[in-house]
Image 1 (cartoon, rainbow, N blue to C red):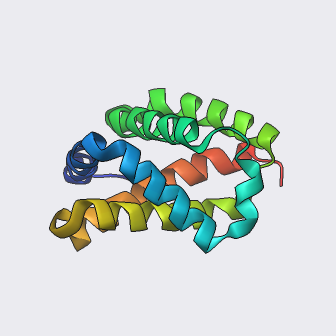
Image 2 (image 1 turned 45 degrees about the vertical axis):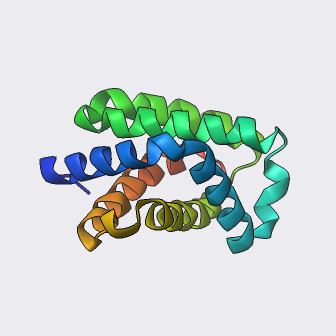
Length: 137
């Protein structure tokens, strides 16, 4: 799945709108994630506020890296290896992606257009497709 320059710009711009409210967005993300799949909650052993800051930092790195996927891919592979050690499964990517889309929709309001949604879906697939081979189960 390839991203166009327009889609990269849409993702980067929409993330820049959410970044100032990143703490609330992270709270919303985890609330929605645990509603979608309550079985994921035990995977998060750290303080959820700390985890939220890590989530936003990882998303920022991924969004910023969209201009150079060759540099982003090894970062995502290393992230997947760490997540594998935490017990993450390939099946967890779908609820995470859905929670992220819900968070973006809520956080962006009218800025969350179908074009923005489609661009984020492609990014989510790129991230998942890069990370899943590093996940054992």
